Image (cartoon, rainbow, N blue to C red; front, side, top):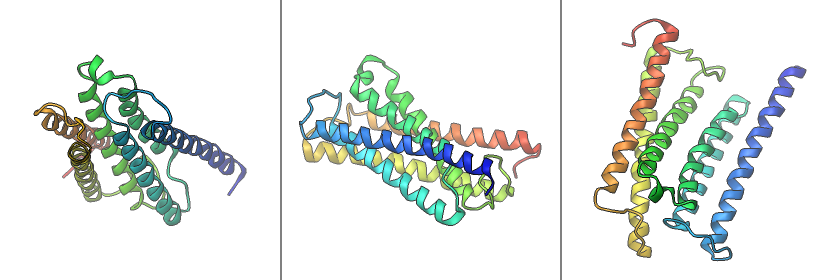
Length: 215
């Protein structure tokens, strides 16, 4: 490894570790509020935020570890920032009661986070199939289709699991995270449209860069 590659890797590691520090700080803050050591108010529940943050960090760390073992390189720093940004939108929406103050905030978060999840999963799935991790789609069309299918179905499954977690939290702790009767259907609809947007983005990018029809 030459000097420039080593320097670049160190810069990427700084960003990755900064993202880890952000996740850790957010989880500690949420745990302290859940345990009532701190007394900040949230629109929904601290437990829901804790579960979401820990689950995101564990999945990201597992993926990064497997990628490091398979490819001998760090999972791209942008993946960490993208996941952190999606998690921040949900957390800040709770902290600052944006779900009540802004009518479209809930829909936007579900749309954005699901799209980000789908795109991130697509990049990760694709990265395990190509020799060198790049954001240029250097593989056959069939692999593109399968990568998109796996990413979209996985992202939709995660969306459904999140709604199930909200339901279980309401049943066990007598909270009201599910909201009105149409909220779950509304959430899943915007999850689905966010995933479709991510799939469309990747497909259009492929068409533009390869100048051929996806069969």
